[in-house]
Image 1 (cartoon, helix red, strand yellow):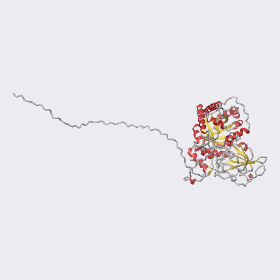
Image 2 (cartoon, one colour):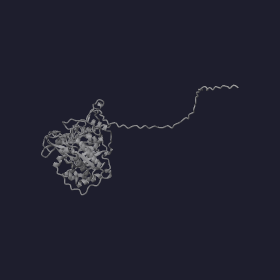
Image 3 (tube, one colour):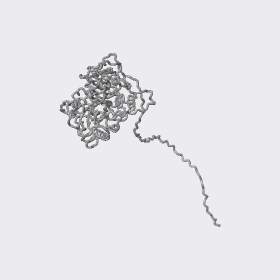
Image 4 (cartoon, one colour):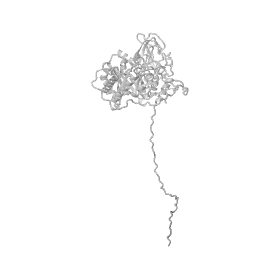
Length: 552
């Protein structure tokens, strides 16, 4: 049998393509909210300069709120526009085309015309009152004071000089928010001078009683530390060791009398100490707040310190270190002729220009507008407004002028009162001062500019007349009346005969003076219902009105 021959061969390669369908489940995922963090951007502050039109505003009658806490708070820009509109005047039709109005640059006073000059004159002429030493220190401040913010919503800041301590029982503490004892002197080495009438007052029982009464009324009490000697200021602003001694001394002096902060009244001149003064204020503020974060720190500055870049104070650089600037808006009179101590408008410098300048440099909440309770008088050749002076000026308080029987006139250019009278020897005198009517106008200016508040230099100079405080805090009627301006006379009779005619003109503008367009003013005294009065007037004309600042 034949063996079969078998041959194996590999099977052919099979190529196949299959479509596989694999069922996939449907997945429903829950909705999720994604929060992507967005960084916060802090953009640098930008100062906007907004052109301010010249506005002529209609005359209206206003009444300020009865209490400071009712006064509104508004934006800084609106305040600046309002003040500048008051200064500018003009027509409302120029709204679109009027150029920007920059603040008026007001130079620092010369050394003999600083507010300190008046004080030095007082110290030389008036003997220090006898003040018995304190038997015990003041009581600690109550929590309503010690835990309160450094500034109230509307500050009423009053200086109490040592020579007014005997009459401090008549101070209206109910309307004050801060009382500053004036004061103690700082030496060149940073020590507090422990001699002189200011130190005697600091150690007196009268001050202890005043501090306790002020705290009971809810007022803050601060110590005013002053230095008017330029050589001492040169060292204090350049010597770190003197600064340290000064800070140590102020902290100890404030704590020893249970006070609530310090007021720095360093009145220098020139720009040599400008940067050093900034460093000194920053250091003192740091030390005081380290001792007690609730203590108040204020600095007294000149009328034009906000605009004078060559002056002693650099308010822009100091602003963050202080709670407020007390603007000494007075001593603006001329030395050669009778003129206003603190004109509201119509002259340079003036309160309105000072406010506009400060608003251009620092927040309104850092500004306290100082108001004088005194004026200046000159011996003159006759009784015409601005008559050539034969001597003066000499400081005179409102209380002294109020005690006379001289007629009172109104200077509608500056919105302040003035008087002319003859002494027993027949010598004519003219005096410009502030009374409740002009004080009310200044309070209105501060209110409409939304400033931190108003201040007084100084308590007691008004004879504790309630009408002055009523005007300062807004409780004054808006009506005033004054004698018509006197006719020129050089007679030696004891009274002027030009104020007795019942047919005299109703204008209160003094002759030979150009009106600024803001005649009249709010009133403060006779209608306040507080018991006080202005100096006597004769043959009053009809009430006048005052233009209001725009409410923006």
